[in-house]
Length: 83
Image (cartoon, one colour):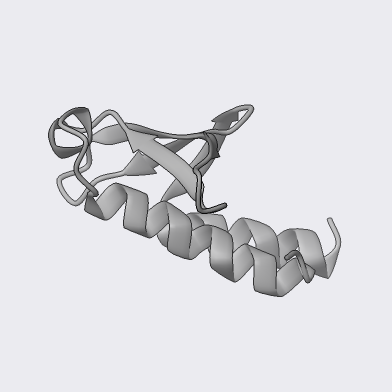
């Protein structure tokens, strides 16, 4: 494992995010429940559209699981130089 791989894994662990499929991630909630956060495409404004299967997410509201996953991906983007 390279230093970059180790840093990548550390960031995922820090945020409680695990990749479970293409554009699908398991995110650990504050009570230990696992929720699935999915990237579902780009909106009209060019921003990514995300969904979570938690109770708030099922009603189309943003939730802390989405926020956690997006913050994790931002940190990974900084690590890897992704745009």
